[in-house]
Amino acid sequence: MSIDLNADLGEGSAHEETVMGVVSSANIACGGHAGDAGTMRDSLRLAARFGVAAGAHPGFPDREGFGRRELHFPPDDVRTFVREQIEALKAVAAREGVPLRHVKPHGMLYNMAVRDETLARAVAQAAADSGVPLYFGLAGGGSVMLREARAAGLREIGEGFADRGYAPDGSLWPRGQTGALLDAAAATAQGVRIARDGVTTAVTGEPVAVPARTLCLHGDGAEAAELARALRAALEAAGLRVAAP
Image 1 (spheres, rainbow, N blue to C red):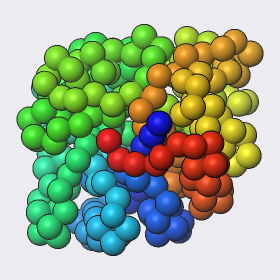
Image 2 (image 1 turned 180 degrees about the horizontal axis):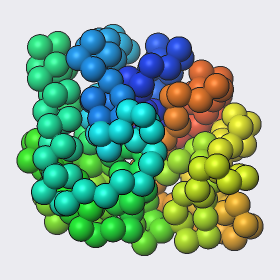
Image 3 (image 1 turned 45 degrees about the horizontal axis):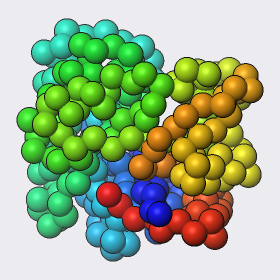
């Protein structure tokens, strides 16, 4: 059995190098919610150094809100700004000689695309336009993200979250509410359970199916380095091979 371990990086975290040395895939911010040509270059160089699969992490063009505010754009605008962000990272990656392997939307763009078919289609089409082959989206929970990725010709990869609480329907528990963010110990336990068994327990106590092929930890948290090391060790101790898809 194997599982991919990914992290959202290129966002200014002090833990980036440590986390990059542990994960197998890196979602690199590409100018929407965070990041610029310099941070993209630095993250890509770290990914190359550690043999980590690099991917694009486009979000709402909302630096003030770090891409975590609910915003609304026409589908053509979404397709345009997502494609522009991916292309910006592709240009830096080409100069660095690093291939881009996947696209994973960020923050509220991701959460809204779980349920909003029109938005999910626009994001998936932008990813397909870019020519990057893999697409990370929420596993289970009635998510339309992976369906739209498949329709756009992408290879969809179901994603679970080690350090986020789940709602009973398989969506992520809203940030700002009790149980939304897990500490390192709880996140490690949840990550192993999702990777090994494809299931976790919702904040409200119900079992939730999470058929994930990649597992996310957030690289900007205060415990990011501790969690990355603990989760990688626990996955391997459970007999799972950590590898990019």
